[in-house]
Length: 192
Ligand SMILES: [Zn+2]
Image (cartoon, rainbow, N blue to C red; front, top):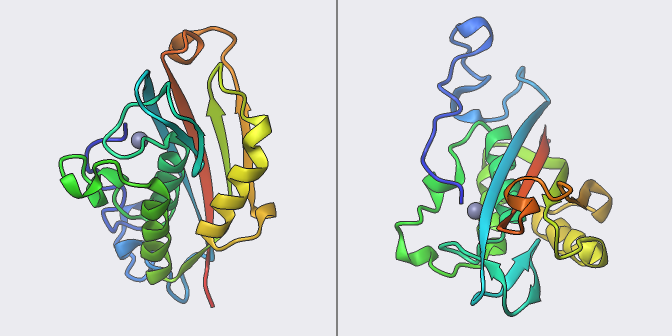
């Protein structure tokens, strides 16, 4: 579960100097950078009585992930990567788990809202890449379906959505099958 609102962008530019038009509000402006990169990470624990949803694809009706929304750990990592790249707040800021409106929310709807936030600031998605870390389920059989759903939500071709699964060879919480972790990077390019 991603939590807490942070302020990734205080508006300070290179070397801490105020640089209007660069980082203020994370907007894409003429004279600013043409690209920005962001990183996201998330983890959720397994529970027996929830459906497992990953990358917008419902994989099974039991042994899913605990969370306020549908707990789509891959989509959450991706959302934080996009928000971070745009210099915005984290997903806990926009979709607080204290808000009943997001109970059981479809994370793909939240992802589309994030894409709108990012594009409102003058950015479009160049490409994303993500890793899902778990012993099971295997990601490979579902990879194409997940990439397709993510690409549609991001407004990019499927070739701009990298995705793979990995294990930690039995080590750590993912190795003990206690939950699933995901990491994502997103590259934004200035639109227009
Ligand atoms: Zn999450």
